[in-house]
Length: 478
Image (cartoon, rainbow, N blue to C red):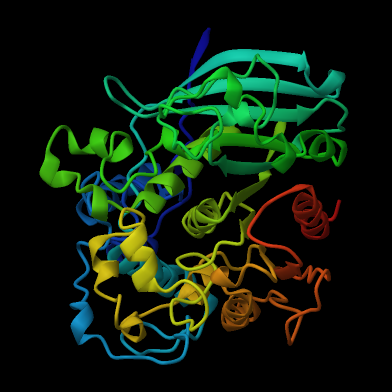
């Protein structure tokens, strides 16, 4: 088994500094305090010049003072009011209006003030803090096989190990087309029951993590050979490869299991044995899963066979919620595909159709933090809605895909979310949502804010993948 250390990106560039640049950058750091943290995906570039050592040292000290401690809530240094004191808003809140009521008037203000503010608001009132990036990640090569899918693809299996004892790991399965002219665009997708369910190839190891009994072949919450290939019909690997795309897949339970009564994954590791720091019902599992997406992206940007500028996050249902959150907090993700993600993902919290905030918090208390439960009976006090989450992805493309028979996920409300995110895309110079009204069944709206609705119910299959790839083709100009 080959082991390699993840390379660290350079964080400094030699740029001549001036007092005004130093002052401006120091101010920017203080403005962003509490919304970056170690979980941020940005690479900081400090101006370093031989004649500006004092300035550079001052900036480094400012950065140190501004960032919260590892694992801290990135909104903790910002004082947000109690939910009961927030002003009710019946309509979806305007993403271009700051929390204090000021309107965003420039692109610079959006990226330096409003976007970080929205990220902090979502973490404070809904998802909880996305945990910090681990100090060290080791990549272990489990196997690499160039004869996958009858020789049409390479199957690469790696394990991302985040630390010593009890640290979480992620088993990542990468399928890359062999016939390509360069690095392949890649769908990074989280699955429900383990990588072994995507193919019947015995070289893919059975998942080691806890599995729900709803997963076929897992009667005692552990994978057996009967589980192998049980979801092949949902993942058309041969067609994905034929279309020139790679697929990187991982199981959510490797990060933290989907259980409301216990956490034995990421949050247990971060709590270091302190039960008070690991309340399963309020831990914010979607934020943890988004962290898993980010760790996979850390690897993918170093993988020579895939294009680091064409990484798409994808998931169905709760995994789709996670795919959207992951993209909202990591600009390395170029497109988000939240498929049938519903309440807490692509449907409005203020929606009147389908699943409600109270219902999702009652049934899945571990998905969100404790603050979000205070909005169960008063969602109009939320200072944001899911249009603001989509706006965090701007101007990067996002596709909402829905089904007519899946009213629980509120397809109409999902389209309204895109409409309410559209002003941010246009403000930033993007086309946004091209459709003025919901398209007919089977018609893809392939603008940067995309929408598609089909017949059928809550599911994901080959026909959906065809739409995903058509949208990716349109955005990446294949």
